[in-house]
Length: 329
Image (cartoon, rainbow, N blue to C red; front, side, top):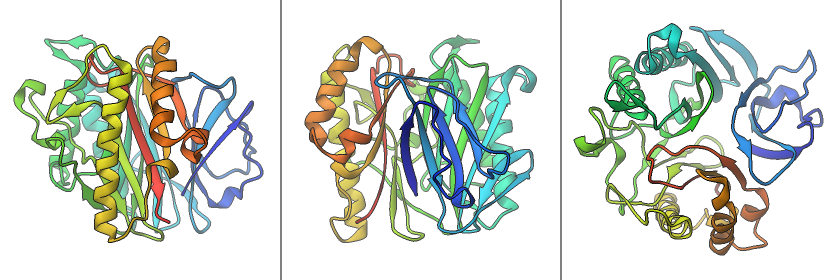
């Protein structure tokens, strides 16, 4: 489902374009032909380890078609769907309104397809930690997102999709997502309070996501949400990027174990997942990378294919956030 590729120009012509749902590029532009049907989205985050661009390519099992539904670009083979939307918060009337508008459009688009079940959302939020009208901007985003979920009668608490929210310096709220014809299984972490049950100290509305989802269309695929050094609902190890990375992996390991329990077999392993690591301070990269390798193994596929990006985390005290995707063996 996911293929990650590094190239100086991120040229993807060797892939069967008909089976590419979408391509998300970090660190540079991609080349494409005028006949290429895929949806392509550039995220304004810098790569920390490579001069070349990194492209996450989402593949379908069958030729996909591209449509624009309710103002949202989607590509689908009727079993799996990739989509994206960009929303200017100034035109929308603020970040809260932009989040509500974007998610309302997404749910409207999904309702017009056979793939009505979201699997995973990636949210890139402008200036995520800055204050706005007495609240952190991330909390404004959470309010608008949850309002849209509730208005659309979507699962905003138990059963919510996996998700992440990373801060950028862009002017637009960027969201891309995967959905499927078959509903996924939501997974929570026994070490953590579910995000949608966070106490009110984290904002008027709780974050709307599950810690992971397990998609069962085709080979089971695990989507782990943005995961950080949080136990219960508290951030751990302030100021220590190595300890935060290690704690994050305790959480990732718990999620993989939970997924394997639901599959009734050890089909997923940390060293075989595809990771994206968001680093708040570029100066911490060496320490975070070193601990990452300790956790997954120096010569593992995970170490080879991981992408490290400079991005802001949804809590100002968190120095690293890690997300992962993996298909069961």
